[in-house]
Length: 213
Image (tube, rainbow, N blue to C red; front, top):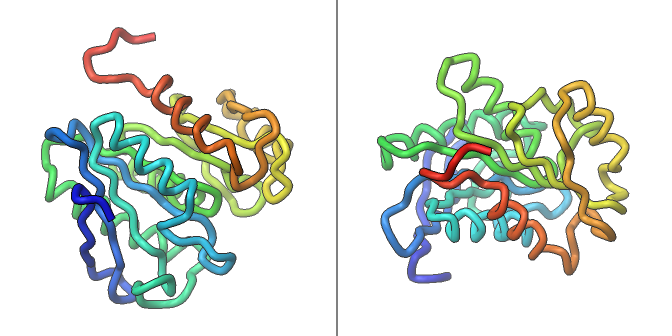
């Protein structure tokens, strides 16, 4: 674990949430919450795509927070099909709001984590406090009822993903008229393609003070 990383715990509705906060070298300009893939299929906050997303946001000057979903690692509880996981992500969101009260909060996730983050954004928007922006990788469309997402959401998918097919994601994104960025040759876990995720997000993220595109 890097010196700029801090382990901590929160209390969720099912008990302990095992968490990790990665900090940039200077004062953060935002906070990013990262959600990992499906807990019942080996998903943890140390998943390579989740770690890539956290490191990407740190390189953008964000503090990146993630936690193990229920029943994973030292987190209490059992898998709750994304419902309780969304409740827990809201607890993380509100904790980060208190810790960094003046900073925007972005949501990011991989696979099952995209379902959790899209649900959280839907809830936050209904309450009039939406997250700054979403980054969804391997969006779980067709696997779970992923809600519609904002038009500026960054959607990244692998061309040869056979867990969540590109067709499923395009069918979900098409009615929303949101572009999907396809990484040629990438499978569901983006083996040997993780650098593309980082580069794409960095290129597409609007930095504070940058002119609007």
